Length: 420
Ligand SMILES: Cc1cc2nc3c(=O)[nH]c(=O)nc-3n(C[C@H](O)[C@H](O)[C@H](O)COP(=O)(O)OP(=O)(O)OC[C@H]3O[C@@H](n4cnc5c(N)ncnc54)[C@H](O)[C@@H]3O)c2cc1C
Image (tube, rainbow, N blue to C red; front, side, top):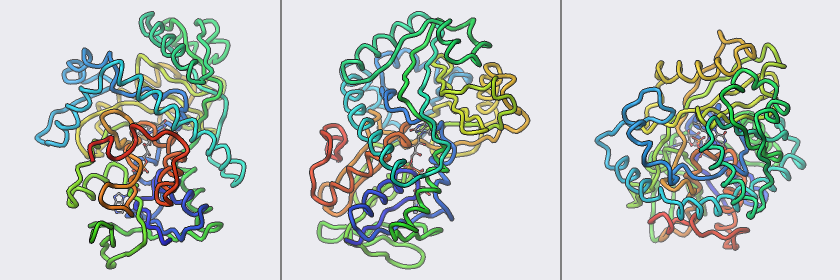
């Protein structure tokens, strides 16, 4: 089949890889001049296979006034005259209960386990260089209630196949001595030895080269898709400034922009952008920078070592599609990171960035064929876990287009589960 993939972020490229491995003739259309210029550019770098619990958790509702009122909160919500934001918000609130959170965690663990297998196979078979690191993740907690909650989640996940250990502060420091500065406020941590990290942009650039050189995938860079054209229960073409592009099948992997493309065909994707920030700093003192990935749960900031750089990421702002860097939000992230690792990096060269996580209210991505458009597969809504889930998502949409059963149970991920 001729398959057209819309979007060259990490999800579109991984879908292109799965489709090319299946022997299809793949073309990837991207409005930017190269891969990973949007959400996949400078994310937290975590391949977070065991930390998949949804944002819509049972403890979230009491925190909402803080998100509205406190400008220093790691999450911000600015209400807008946008029915899409309100619809998303109502569905998000409806998902904030323990039953739904447990169910989504179980589902996402299935998807992330598949991704882990596929990432390992990709790394073995394609020798992709992306500062890939397999030294695990340490989530550090600053109050007893959160530590107890994290241990309860660890026990729940142990039954689902995750290997994690609870550590007291002394053990945390033995594992990651660079945490000395914040140790006085820590009560402990959870260590997950088989978590991984890497540079998502380098992954995407490397994968797009591999796709072009080894799999004959064609790229149409700098090509903006303005419209999807459907006819007789199928997608017939996509419109670009250079004219219509036809194919036998299509994959929509346009990140936060996917909803706007699908809406004229009468489908309302439950997607909203969660704006996040990151810093990328040159490490000047390796002993003072974290060696393994660290999540500071109280401050909602993640740290990853990417070779001789340190990536810091945080913030989740529901403020629309604007990607302007807000100085107050950036300063907050710099302050948190500099307080934690003051001697690790060159703080005059912070490499600031902001991107839009394409989020669904439940945090479960939308994967599979659009009802009534049998040759269009959706690969959207990976939210805060797009790097982690991209390989599995790509495999699933390739299987859907081939009419094959997915490798995992698909409840919660299918377009019909998301109201389509
Ligand atoms: C601050 C931050 C930290 C994060 N940390 C992590 C992390 O640690 N681990 C993790 O797993 N995930 C993380 N994520 C999430 C992850 O980065 C995203 O889920 C992922 O990058 C989404 O990939 P995507 O391919 O769906 O979207 P994108 O990367 O945005 O790609 C979509 C592509 O579609 C193209 N496109 C859109 N519309 C059109 C059009 N009309 N015509 C042509 N092209 C179009 C865009 O140009 C873009 O290149 C983080 C995100 C942020 C913002």
